[in-house]
Amino acid sequence: MQALDDTRAILRDLIAFPTISTDSNLAMIDFLGERLAAAGARVEIHRDATGAKANLFATIGPEREGGILLSGHSDVVPVADQDWTTDPFTMVERDGRLYGRGTCDMKGFIAAAVAMAPLYAERAVERPVHFAFTHDEETGCLGAQALAQILRARGARPAVAIIGEPTSMRVIEGHKGCFEYSTHFTGLEGHGSGPDRGVNAVEYAVRYVARLLELKEALKARAPKGSRFDPPWTTINTGALVGGVAHNVIPGKARVDWEMRPVQAGDADFVKADLHAYCAHTLLPAMRAVMPDADIVTETIGEVEGLVPADGNEARAIVMELTGANGADTVPFGTEAGIFQALGMSAVVCGPGSIEQAHKPDEYLALDQLAECLTMLQRLAGKLGG
Image 1 (tube, rainbow, N blue to C red):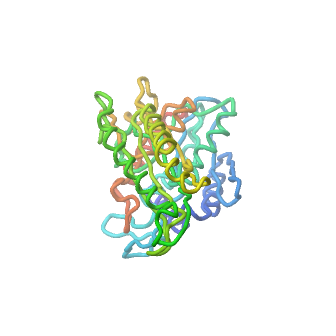
Image 2: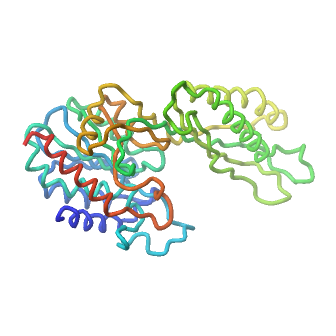
Image 3: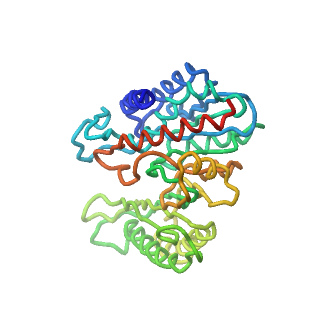
């Protein structure tokens, strides 16, 4: 299958770009832009404020509304401290699997979409196909949110968005939101032998985490009736608690990294209002009784809305037809789909590979999954009017 061979070759090149979220993705974006331009696409590259990251937006076909968007993120999670058996940035094929960081999450889909560009250039007569490859999805969907601002300002926007996150090619019509925060505690350092003369930032951070655990339990009772998510309620996770310098020093700084994944907007408001009141009326008065300048500040890393299952979802209807699926599911993990839905597009998530392989050492994408994805994208050409 020529398309599979082409996709495998493109994917090998993409894996060789170490696009960890902390690093630049420009080389990969330039590579993708050149491939798409060679196929006849009109390519735009939009850099972020630092100049080190960029989104790519490209179009094949007529300049009109109602196009179909194929979306993927270019960044991957770190490999540090993971026990890989191969070089994570050199794709290795073994036993029907393609190993490498980003193979399933989600460079496999990007490679397949780009491999289809020449076919789309022949067939996109009535309906355009768009490509959106973003930066920093893994750290708050920053790239997609920046791209959304650009698309919002345009008169003509895509009507359908297919986000190729790894779903084992299941059609996903809904997922939870992903709200990420870092809460910073500023206390007063001192000698450990006089704890009452300092403000122990770590201890107050621990109390804050205890409150998060209470809210985590309270949210279970707020699960909407008939929720299709697993678990059906909004979840909270404490990802890190950082602070302190030595056994005998009262720590003056601490940080709690945490997230919640709302199933409904009201849950996020509930959590934030409770934490604000707890800090304002309980923690801060105690801290400032010792040091007036003590403080608690919550930094918003990203608030990405979920994908809401919707009636009359054209994206769902198209992808179900292309894949032969007889239904659509929901998942607990987040994607950029809700950002595109908020722009007025119908959106679904469907892509090759299993989320169970994402972020792990020896991440892989099964070749039969990649072939199934290519079949879907080849059939999509029939929706473009040529």
